[in-house]
Image (cartoon, rainbow, N blue to C red; front, side, top):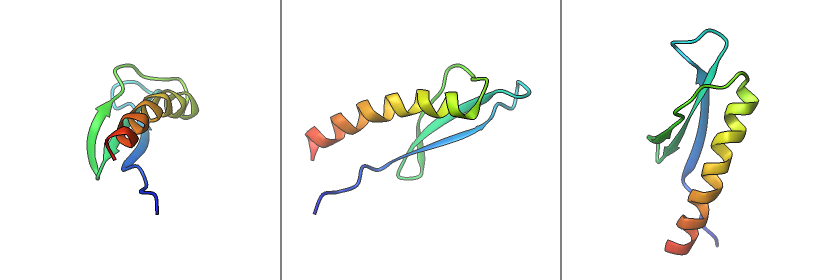
Length: 64
C-alpha cells in the first residue's frame, strides 16, 4: 500500500493586512514553509501553496 504524503496546507488571514491571506505548509503538524507574500483571496494563497507541495511530494516520493 502506498504511503500518503505528510503535507497539509493551511490558509489563514494575514494578521498584518486586512482581507489578505497567507499559507503555511505543515509536515506532521509542524510548519515546514510559510508564504513570503500575502494574497488577495484564500483561493490564490491555496493555489500558490499547492505548487510547492507538488514539488515536495516529488522529492518525498523519491526518498520513499
